[in-house]
Image 1: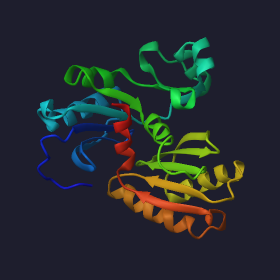
Image 2 (image 1 turned 180 degrees about the vertical axis):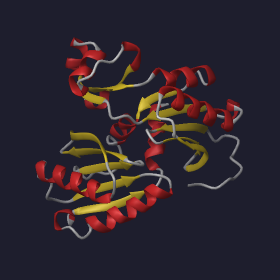
Image 3 (image 1 turned 180 degrees about the horizontal axis):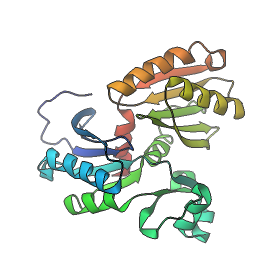
Image 4 (image 1 turned 90 degrees about the horizontal axis):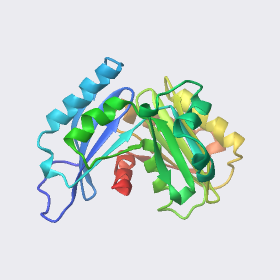
Length: 261
């Protein structure tokens, strides 16, 4: 994480928000320097509790006029990734119901188009997110965290087989790109690094990943940093991951938000 410093006058400063089941955090991004501004743990896991936590974070950030850009990633398990053709033929809330097997109101469903992948990610976005953020920052771009990861996968390394795993407290996401296609997206709960290893091993086995590949492991905060290191140690002891170039990254998944503003 970056330290305090004076930003150049011509440097764009972006407010980045990250909402997960366990916490809500605000970061300041200027160039490649990212700094944690505020973070609250979500003790009351209700709409009212989350709304209160998000309002508290925004209030503590203070005057928003110092930011040129505003973005927010929402990390929720209720999502589906569908081709453009299917999205065009169905209502977003109907598509999501097929995946999560529960009824959602139209106001609690949102979507992000991914023309890079000829797809759309449809997901649950509770109204409390927009009700707090849009009045405070009308230009804010709110998207699912997987949207940012998927956009990033069209850039960077030329190695055709790449995986991105983003760790949060108690939950993680995994995206796998192979031969130019997205072949896996998932969000899982976990109790310790063993659960993450098991899911990775299952996915790599099912997808027959047994050649040179890159595995990026993201996540911020002390509890997550500890899990990341333990996870890396375990994976390096397992023969099926001997072809994987494992790279731990602290905050790069947050910087992926620059792709949406």
